[in-house]
Length: 394
Image (cartoon, one colour):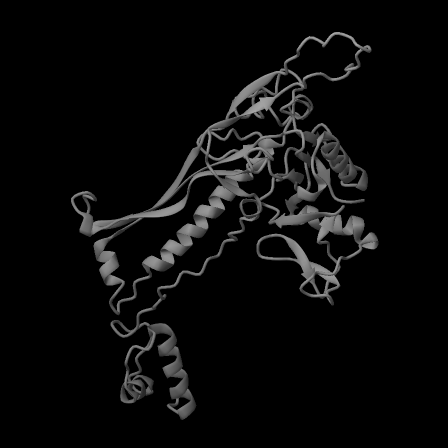
């Protein structure tokens, strides 16, 4: 390399990029650039690849479902469920007739406990100290904690998106287990006995009030159609869902098929903050919102759509594309709590113990624990719906 001004500037830039501005005088740079007895990258003691402290995340940390579900404070361990009405019909009485016998509806206590969730980050005191020197130490506490927090939320969201066939255990219950039914267990071969039982309620023996609406094709893929979409809307609303508090949730693959299905029929409501917007896009939280370009949907039958990466949303059995959920997250009028949401005894916190807390820590190191106590709670199942066994639009 001829040590021209341009080459010297380039070498200074490369050194600055690799070593973060480690002082090196111009004479040293020129010495390195001489053509006789050249110092090569393979010459011992002169070159060390520096990787930098920052870690560039290669993974998608989408947590759409966690973001869209309302969170509410833990007040009680469960709820009372009304399984029957006081009376279904026949309330007429004769003029001056006797007061009818009293009646009593059936009630059941449903226990929805709490689940604890945690991940731990541990590093030695030596690593922490070295990270403060000029050595190439790929570690920064604040940065690692930020990555750990992203991973925590992603993992919680992944558990929320678990398949109905995956019993929750110590993990949070999944939306697919909430939105299940006796019909799904009976007709879909991928769902085994007891898979969809939730909060100790049996969905295997027969249809009950704890069944959600499930539009299935007995574990055989069939093409997504307007008929399927309308069936999910009609059955949930008939059961008592409030159209104003319903939300669609699905994967990018199914969302793309919905665009193909309804593309020629789309009508847009102009966003209040941008009256000139003509189309929509999917924002960072997964919600389809207004934009000034594109041919996409913000709503479907008047309900907003939240979209997650396709590999995050359940595509059960022989499905080709993700499930399509229609969720009612409205509020209960008595307790003013969401009908469907994440009950939170402890919101995510970071607990820390360091070498300074020795001997409580009992190590020459430091540890951070991200901890939360939360559970998915659904107080009404029959107003939640999903379509499964979906294939692409014809």
